[in-house]
Length: 169
Figure 1 (spheres, one colour):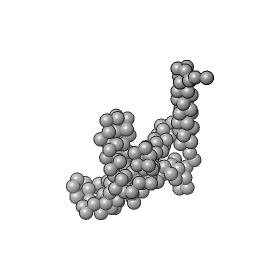
Figure 2 (cartoon, helix red, strand yellow):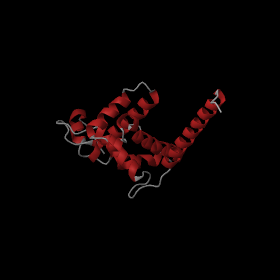
Figure 3 (cartoon, helix red, strand yellow):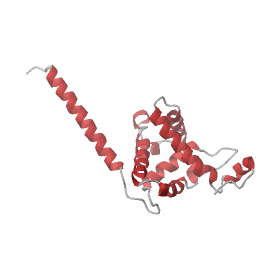
Figure 4 (cartoon, one colour):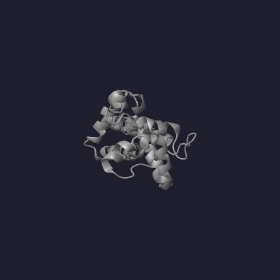
């Protein structure tokens, strides 16, 4: 039996349906995971993603020799999520998993599997992206990590010199 246009359309529809089911299954697996040990809202994976993002956004420099990856940004965000509606908190957590999976197509691995330099480059590419949703999520995460980083007691003294007030937590 020869392959007809109807066969091609049916195969295309089947492939699309299978893709939608696959994406939905992955999304459900990311949604509302149980909180990890010591967290009220975040799973251990989500906390690791946050620390990796904080390290990429705020690496140690000669001026401020402390990396964002070492300053409890995960605990900061976990406590900040107390004020979020449960649905919004679950959406933020699912977005973290999506961010972690995003480099698989370009770098062959998750955000967590990348080196520090690769994470920084990927984060910059997201902030510079032409895709507004990606740019918005990346910018929001950098801003959240910035609140955790700049107000941490180990880093706040560097910023207090600039601002001359009781800067920090």
